[in-house]
Length: 530
Image (cartoon, one colour):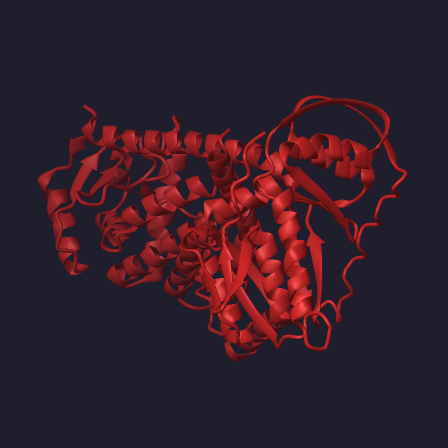
C-alpha cells in the first residue's frame, strides 16, 4: 500500500471510529428529547429525529475535515505517535502508541467497505423490486370510480399531483411507491373487505405519505443506514423516524375521517384482512410506505386513548440540567491541566548495559524500531522521512551498537531523552541541538525559555500560520522559505514563545539561520540516499 493510500485509509478508519462515540451521544440526546416530548405532537418528535439523523450524517464529514490533511495523517501513521502536551510552562511529550490501532484500521475499513457494498446491493435490489412491481402484468389500474375517489381525496388534502391507484395482490395493504410519479398499490381484499368510508380513510393515510414527500425522505434515510450501518444507534434513530412518520400520517387521516375511533376501526379491519390471508404477501421492500407500517398496537392505542399533555417544564428543566452538566464536564476536562490531573509517569530509560538478541529478515525500518522500543520499554518518536528495510542478526549485543550499525550508514541518528527514543535524519537532530544552544546563548540572564507565555490551539494549519502566530506573540521577526509549507496541528497552553518555536521547528524537521531581519526558517538541505 502506498503511503498516500495508507494515510487515507488511516484517516477514514479514525473517522469511523470517532463516530462510535458521536453517534452514541446523539442517540442519547434524542432519547432525552423524546422522553421530554413523549405526550406532544409526533410531528415535533419526527422533526427532532430527522435532525439527529442529519447530525449523524454530517458528523463523519466534520471529523474527516478535523483530522487534517492526508500528509498529516501519513506523518502520524508512518513516523511516530507523539502528541505535544504543554502546560504550566513545562513541556513533555505524551506518547500515544497507535500500533494496535494502525494494524486494525485497514481491516476495519475493509469490513466497512464490504458492509456498505452488501447493503448497497440490497438497497438497489429493493429499488428495482419497487420498479418491477409497477410494471408487472398482474398489476392493474383500479376502476374509474376508485381513481375518482383518490383524485377527490388529493384535492381535499391539498395535493396537486396525479396519483394512480393500482391493484396488486402481493402487498399486505395499501402501499405508496415512487416520489415524482407516485402510485398506490392496494390488494383486492382491501377493496372488497372495507367499507367505502373505511377505504377512503386508509387511502388518506397513503396520500399523507405523498403529501409529506415521505418516499424521498425514506430513500435518503436508507442511504444513511447503508453508510453508517455498523452503529446500532443509527438503526434505533431510523426506527424512531419511521414510527413517528406513521403517527404523523395517522393524524392527517384522522382529520379526513373526523373521528379517531372510526379510523382505528378501519385500521383494525385492514389488519384482520391481512392476517386472514393464508398465503402471506410479500412486502414491497423497505422503500415502500404501507398503511400497516409501524407498531400496529401502539398506533391503535394512541388513537383510542390519546395521551394527555402533561406540564413540560419539569422534564424540560431536567433535560436542560443534564445537557448543561454534560457541557460543563466536557469543558472542564478540555481545560484541565497536568497540574490538576497528574500525567502518567514517563517510561523509564533503559540501562546502557541492556543487551539484545534479534533476528529479522527484510522488515521495515520503522517496524524494527518499534520492536526495539518494545524490548527496551521506551516510547518512540520517528521522523516521517525515516524509511527503508533492514536485515539483521545479533546475539547478546548492546542495543546502542545495534542502532548505530543500522541507522548510521543510512544517514539517520538517534537520541534517548526522558525515556523517549527519537529517530530522525542526523541533520535534523543536530539542528535541534544548534537551535537550543542559540536560544540559550541569546538569553541575557542565561536562563532558558524566558519568552512571554502564549496559548493557542491550531489544527491543520500551514506552518507559515504557526510561525506568524509565534512571531506576533514573541515580538520577533520570523521569515520562512515558501517551499517549507506543511500542515500541522499544535496546542500550547501558557508556554514561553521561544520554547514553542523550539518544538515547532523540531517537529517540522526544519533548519534555520539568523540574519539582520531576525530568524529565517528554511528547509533542511537534502540528504543523499545511501
